Length: 261
Ligand SMILES: Nc1ncnc2c1ncn2[C@@H]1O[C@H](COP(=O)(O)OP(=O)(O)O)[C@@H](O)[C@H]1O
Ligand SMILES: [Mg+2]
Image (cartoon, rainbow, N blue to C red):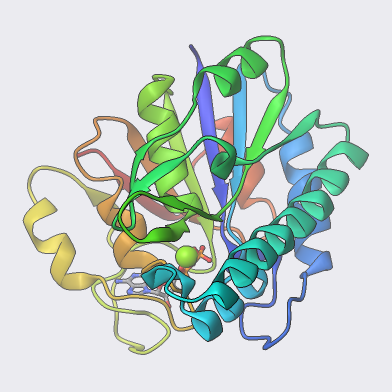
């Protein structure tokens, strides 16, 4: 299937430094317009991160490390409900812009093991894409067969669906220009890596750390690790720069990092 998987970071559509769940409406509206501006003639899945809707409550309740008290069952439930709330807001803005966005709760079928996705249903997403719909999965707390609950991030959903549905490419729209030699938010002399391929792949893991904001799913390190070795071209672009998402979707040149390894 000619399919693009676009992941929008929680750092883009929420205020990731907020201690309470907070949408970045300005960014969400602009990104929705940018997705709509792509006159697509192929399939699209939009995965979104959760930013301040997820990472704060998960850090406070510890459910990413599993469930050991009855109270944490309530935390598991409330965390899922909060992500549904964000997904409702995201899909509403996409629909307002004419994108047939379809809420897609990955945790309704996902099985995790010690924080790693074992399987989830991709068939329905694929069929929805085939009829022209745009499934919108998002980061969620999910059933874990070892620790009862762990976090299934958008960064893990995107490559999983890409492999299962044989997507053409993955685009990560985040809050930095791409992968740098170190965290650009901490080191002003960090250099942008334009391409990751078999020649420099062994260096990549040394360059990456987590996130400057609260990110229980491993920030940039985890994001990129999931993309290495799946055999699907991936691109990391800065969604804070207006126009970048449309350009990337159209296959036009955008400053960023391309992963071909
Ligand atoms: N080598 C690196 N190159 C780029 N970003 C990095 C690197 N190491 C750490 N980061 C951090 O990763 C962050 C992006 O990850 P994250 O906050 O999880 O974004 P998202 O919300 O898009 O998932 C950047 O804001 C940056 O601070
Ligand atoms: Mg992240």
